[in-house]
Image (cartoon, rainbow, N blue to C red):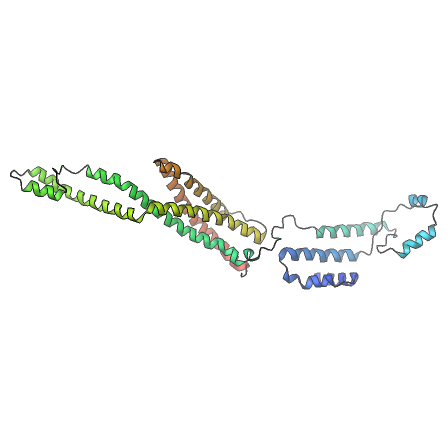
Length: 326
C-alpha cells in the first residue's frame, strides 16, 4: 500500500524524491523510517484531493468587485488555479480540507519518540549487554566484599574472645604457660593435687587461646579491613553507575521503560548500598547499632541480587533475541 501511494506521489509531483525515500528506508533507524512513512502517507492523501474551495462568499465578493472588470478577473483565475479554488462545491471543500488536516496530523512527530537519536553501539547488542555483564560481576563482587567484612569483624572481635578465655585460666605462679606451671607444681616438695587438677583442666583452654591468637595474626596479615573498605566503595560506585545505565539503555532502544520486579529490585538495591555506606562514619566510632544496620543492609542487598538474577535472565534473553551486533 505504501509503495502504491509512493508511486502515485512521484507521478503527481513529477519528482523522484518519494521513490528515493522508500528505497532507502532500510538505511534509517526506526524513528526516521516512521517519519518517512508519515511523509509518504501525507503525500498520498494530499494528491488524492485535486483542490479545495474556500467558503462561498459570492454576494460580498460581487459587491467588492462591482467596479472591476469581472470577465478579466475570472479569466485570470482560470489561468492560474492549481488547487481549484474557483470550485463552488462546499461539500467537496469540506472533504478535501479534512484530508489535508489528516495529512498534517500524520506529519506530526510522536510525542514520546525517545528513540529518535541514533545511539550507535550503545543501542546495539554490545551496549545492551553491558548492564547484565556488569551486574553479574557485581553480584559475585558483593559476596566477596561481604566475606571480607565478616573477616574484619572476626579479627576485631577475636581480642575480646581471647581476653574472656584468659580470665578462666588458673594462676600460673609466674610461669609462661600452663605446661610450665604444671611441671613446677608436680616437682614441688608438697604437691597440691587440686592445683594440679586445675592446671590439667585448663590445658585445652590454653590450646584454644593459641589457635585464636594464630587466627587473629593471619587475619591481620591478610588485611581484610582495608580490602573490605576498598571493595565496598568500588561496589557502590560501579553498581550505582550500571544500575542507572540499564534503564538508560532500555529507553534508548525501546523509547520507554518497563516497570516490574527487575526495575524495582535494582532501585531498592541502590538505596540499600547508600544506607550501608552512610553507616560507616558511626561504625568507625564504635557504634554497634550502625554496624548492625550496615550488615543487615548488605545482606538484604545480596538477597535482592538473587532476585535480580531470576528476574533479569528473561530480559537478557529478549535482548539477545531483538538486538544485533555490535
